[in-house]
Length: 456
Image 1 (tube, rainbow, N blue to C red):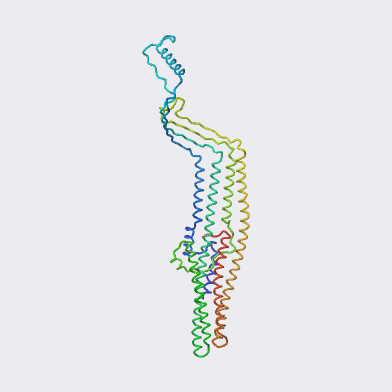
Image 2 (cartoon, one colour):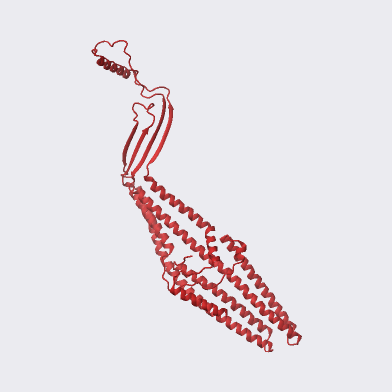
């Protein structure tokens, strides 16, 4: 009955895969929750998110270079004395003042200066108490394309980190599914051992009756007891394996012990189409983005020789303490041209180009390795499927052999050792069947990953 259900399930999976989407992995809700929690708990993803935030801020910082910078200034200075003209200059200024007054009142310039007319004191060049409050504006009008290239480099760096994060998420998906399946394998192994326990109980009842009727000896009971002890040890190992996998899952996902203990993973194969097309792997995308980032960084460094143009402005809020030589405001535009820097910019640009060539070489190698991994994954899946079919046949054969041997024993045609050996073969075949289901699921998920079709 179980075999028929499994065959119907496989038929449905195969039909659905061919006729529908390539992404019909049909994960259980519990497994999806574990994957989500594992991603949220993973430290590498958290660090990558912080690196992405840094890259985003780098982009914003580069873009904001072209915004005007406004500075408010304030200061107070006290000199030991006012800064004034020397005596000769003051005498000249006073004489000039007298000549202007004479001219204004109509007195000949060579006549004595009339008495009673006040003269204005000559102001100092700078008062000794200086209070200033001003605003400055610095504005880069043209950066020689350095800002635009820096922005592009930062954007591609951000994309590279973003894709790297997705790569890490795929690895988390692979590991979480593998741990989940290992838990399922441990549970199925215990179920196999429990079914063996039922076989032994039936044998124990038969041997007890046979001993009473003189058809079996006490040594047969001892052999059964020893088989029970061995089975109990195996059951304990299977239970310990479950506890170990649950502990690893708890550490990896942060899920509660109670939740994990209630899981009942199913080892049905993933529904995939082996002939599905491959998508470009995230590893290639990440390397290409990193290559583009280095390309724009190289351009930024090479463009250092292009002239830069900037505007500068200044405005004084307090005029009273300005010296006679200081303006209230000014605006200016200037250019800076790095005519020769000793080839520093060129050498830096060449170094960055070499980094880009390294990424290109890594891309070429990665493409070859990915193609190899696809071939290996396809072969592994084919082998795993064949192994599953063979394991099912081994279970059928072992069970039939056990039934035959058991009948022979009941008819006195064989020994209890033969029965126990046949039962051991049943146990081994059933365990190998569950292991083949686990390997088939693992091979399927690895093929999805190799072809870039992992969409969990």
